Image 1 (tube, rainbow, N blue to C red):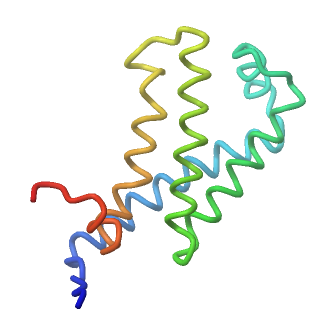
Image 2: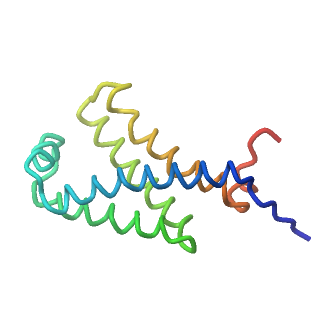
Length: 132
């Protein structure tokens, strides 16, 4: 028999706030790529990607984000966002970006993607047993 534990109100509110802020950041990032703002295209080209890939990268991020925001597919979306952010980390490594200001940023965002799921999802808490 499996028991489920409801998260506290504070955990739920914290999860919602982190999810909204992270989602807004990722939405902004994907939209700037989809509309091909010049500074985004320039930054992508400087990282070694062709300018034709900017919309593909933005569209991929948007699909992952939508999956993440739908409760039924949130874990799948988080896994896909983790892969996306891993690619971003790899791209940062490739251009030898500064460690704390740029290189670790995808890791920070990844933590912000998973933390709300941990706070509100019993399955994630059972898989990731922190402190027990």
